[in-house]
Length: 212
Length: 190
Image 1 (cartoon, one colour):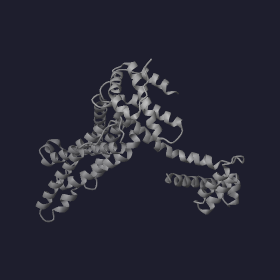
Image 2: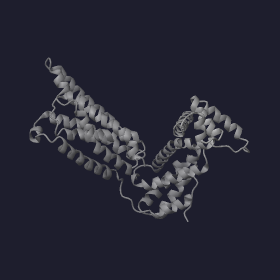
Image 3: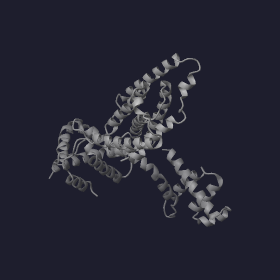
Image 4: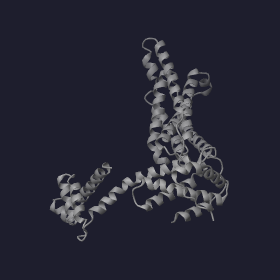
């Protein structure tokens, strides 16, 4: 086909276009993916008593950390969802969250009595925690990847990695509705591991999901 | 009839306001403006791709069309607060990158075609066979002999297999593996 003909065909399809579709597609993905993740959690592991959880500072620490990482990832996804997108300064937010949790973990370790360290580091669920976060992140990563396909990312591995961190952070926050661990050290190690794994997975499968 | 403008790349900066105005009008539904801007962008994209592709002209035109289609499909991601041409070239770069990625897979096909050349009247024949022999030297002994018999001497897979004391099935597997090895080697030389 000649290019002039293609141009004519496309021009015939000129119609008023709404504002940029990022908010629509990404929020759709987060809601859909988030609901699936939540459903998986409830069916698989169940919820902890939430009124008791709300009174527990550790609950909010875990939620805060998870959501901070999710926001960091989300900012990058937002920016990279279009062709001229650049990563921007969101990684500083991620670094700040990691540093904050790292400091809290250090303080906790320093103040801990002899012999309490294994419990602080391993908790009861260290073997399963990262894996569960990764599993819960899958519906979100998939939904985000498909949403990004409708948008126009040009740096696919990076966008995938950011989507993975966003998915992982939200999954960790959802997991917090079940998880009873209270140690900052545990949070710093095992939650970070789960969210990082989700980021790596996103970077690996992102290009396949998102290529347009 | 819309005026079609030829834009040398260095003058794109000057053309940006006009192109952007046309695009915004097009995004609001003005078909004539939309046609104008797409035609103008085609003129801009053509030299962009031509400079970066050393292959046949038809690939350049394919990329121009692919990019126009992408611009059309993703026009909802263009924000009116930003410049148009960086957005356009980001899409063009992306399509170019994907084109190079896809081309790597085409290497196996052209290798096969090169191997199949056996027209005795072709003066290039000797040179091609020399190159092919050099390539085959990269393979281990039996694979090399199989490939030479089947591809250069024109024996059937069955004949070559029997000569090497293999079953036809095993020979097919060995030939396939040899082709893969050779195309990886050729790829690596890029």
